[in-house]
Amino acid sequence: MNPADAPLFRRRLLEWYQRRQRPLPWRKTHDPYRIWVSEVMLQQTQVKTVQPYYVRFIKRFPTLRRLAGADLQDVLKQWEGLGYYARARNLHRACTIVLKQHGGRVPDTWGPFRVLPGVGDYIAAAVLSIAFNRPHAVVDGNVKRLLARLLTLTAPVNRAASHRLFQEQAARLLDRRRSGDFNQAMMELGALVCTPSSPQCPLCPLVRFCAAHRSGATARFPRRVASRPVPEIEAAVGVVFKNGRVLITQRPAQGLLGGLWEFPGGKLREGEGPAAACVREIKEEVNLEVVVESALAQVRHAYSHFRIRLHVFRCRYAAGRVRRSGPAAHRWVRLADLDRFAFPKANRKFIPLLSRRPKAEV
Image (cartoon, rainbow, N blue to C red):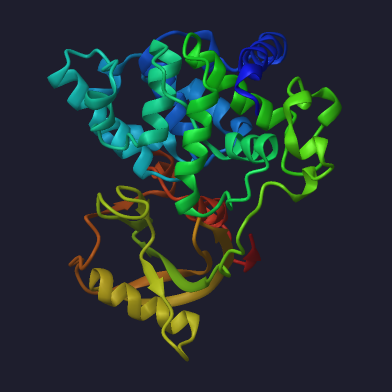
């Protein structure tokens, strides 16, 4: 792009954004805390999924002080189903640090904000530009796609080594006087017009600047490298009944699904049947002997880097006293009380079936 075109480029983009931006709930506030919450939720999650979660979360924790003072289990419960739970844990911890070290005021400069738990370059640039108009360019998937077409960048958008190039180009185009609006406009244009398939070029305010459109090569951008096949893990889970209650265990605070509750179980060994794996895993994990009464469900669920197939069994307690090897905590609870706990989505898929016996596909 000719540098002389940059002022017109920025003006066209911002005028379009002023007319076409979606009325999203986090655009109705200038509160840095609420903007921060929205950006954390929007990481790796679609806008339509985030909206109801954001509204409920802000209603429950309307201020940074309220979130910092909340019990982590309450925070995870509000986050339940949104996935990537490390985001919630880090946000909660970061808010406690802001409360203690910054008097509850979100830092408005790069250094103090960037060092907070869970705050990477993207979150820092987004929050600081939108909340404080600091001149930091935001680069997400929508922006990469838009830049790749505008500038016919051949670097693969899904290769980590390419990120620096896209960041440099975004910074070069940034309107430093209206950084927050510019960043949101770039992301919005990528989401609504410069879409992955069938981009709506006639509706694009930047079509005159787009090198891919001029050369008739829009479909060839952005470029991507082939992804590795996603592995599938097979696991067995047991819902252990004892005296009208079921056993749930809590995952360690750190790691995948940290702090959430689940039913005991684990991966199948090579050549091992699901029911046998269920009995073995429960013995190893909580030191209980159980009898498998029936197959309850098979649940398939996809995570970011793998898929899982859960064989879920209804089990009867036979003997033993709980001694944990792995879980951070355990509880014997009534079925009616399960809603008080934050569970992974894969568990939530079969919890409604616990009052039934026949096998089902979920």
